[in-house]
Length: 315
Image (cartoon, rainbow, N blue to C red; front, side):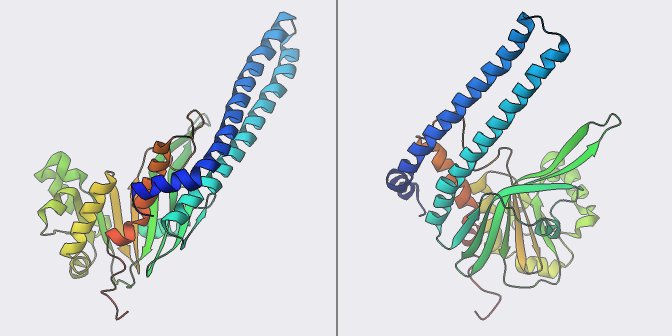
């Protein structure tokens, strides 16, 4: 399944019956939320009306509030799990039956570390919506990832700074590179012009600045590597064109690294992906189209970067 027309037909014949059942479950969750809010408000009002003391007031209200929170957490969790198994997993399989989906799993953080795409330190890593399998001859895995640096201030309050939030992908490049090559958004030159270009050359932690001949590519990306020849060997004219097209297609910041025998790709998102809406009907094609487009963006990486063409081997 590749096109919106195919998705719409699949939606009508296969997804809509499941969505109808799930939408009833969504309404039950909303009803539970409404009842929970009412109970949480009424409980202290009743306690105050009968002039209970503060200790009795808390003894009545605290268990009620905890009970409401637990109930809503359980019911919402069940609803989300049913949605992901019934809808997201089915869309993944419809796009490519060779792929598997695990709603609770994420790309192993060792891959994220190995990619070296983010130099800012992080100490909390979580994710979900893991997809893995073979796309043609290429091994691909991806998931949502949220990497943060978490610290505690002098008053014991938790402070979290996001290092990366979005889709993180790892694909087999079918060649073990000797060096490391990084393709990063060219923010410095866009902001500071020629001064930004000078700042780029000072990024010693990434290796040497590699100037590419593709003007359009240079406007969007900056390339670093510890082997100038290998970096240019990897980033052929056609691959640069494909990376540029992929960036325009995603319309989001994109980072790539070529390390070992893998290409790592990080696509930034501000929103959480593949989550069901509680306050919006599921009987609407548009949200399903959004899930499909986000999944396809990741899965199509193999074709978009032409990874199945094994120019590096005799295969």
